[in-house]
Length: 224
Image 1 (cartoon, rainbow, N blue to C red):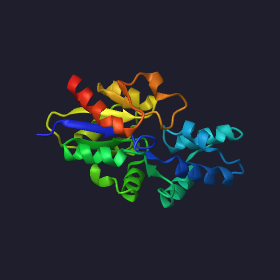
Image 2 (image 1 turned 90 degrees about the vertical axis):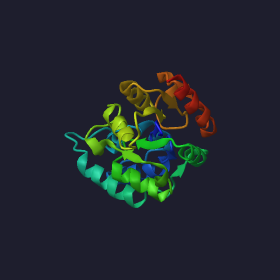
Image 3 (image 1 turned 45 degrees about the vertical axis):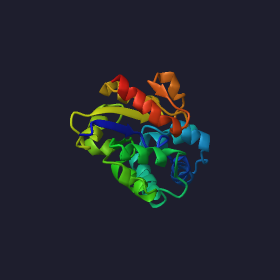
Image 4 (image 1 turned 180 degrees about the horizontal axis):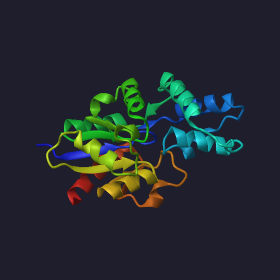
């Protein structure tokens, strides 16, 4: 029976979503009379969900208003983003080839993200990636977000594997902490969204391209 699970972060790991996240954020910011933020700013602000992205965007463009309530702006962000979710988003090079190989060899594949579950499924559907994954877990799935280990464990559990061994693949400190909290190895990718390079947080393996991921995954399972 298959017993190996690979759980991926989504934004900045599987898919380059920064162009569409930037457009949705700027839709809100410009509507509030703020300047648009740049791609570099977006890449450093992503990772803790859309509310954090918006508050970081406001902080960078003049500061948070007094007694600021993020919820109305968050709803405007989600509405715009859901309608434009894959206009500029694309899988990172080598992702599809890796997923096909892993699934063909019987690995269980899941997604554990701090993007809402529904938006995550919508994005994966739009990019024809959903069929690779047996689970997609967001912060709203259980009401807790990474780096809490429970979303990761839920993503593994939903795969229905017998006594699974699992690893995490991600681009940020949050993903490394999630793996550490869950007691599993983690592979870091350097092309994602984080104010500090993920290598600084000590992932068990670093890869520069998804062409290197299969060997790193096999190595980590061999050590488990």
